[in-house]
Length: 75
Image (cartoon, rainbow, N blue to C red; front, side, top):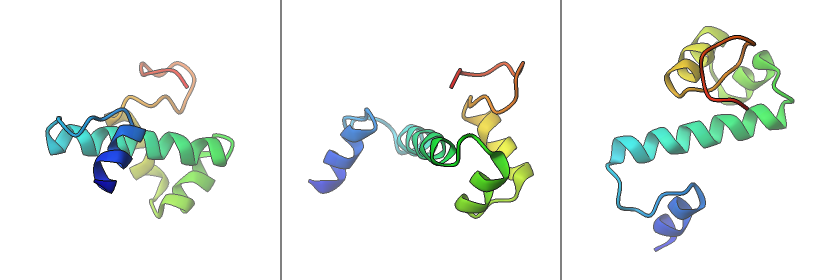
């Protein structure tokens, strides 16, 4: 039950495919870490254990806007 409760925290009712649940979790998690690091990409990448280019790639995949002018979801 704890897993279903955790999923609902991210807007998931437990009735979505695993791929979508993971995507939504990753997006929410990265956005939270970006907020904690005041949207500094380098600090966020370090906190996530990623290299900067990989964070940019993941952000693009998850529709997270890191640079002004990128076509993606707004902050």
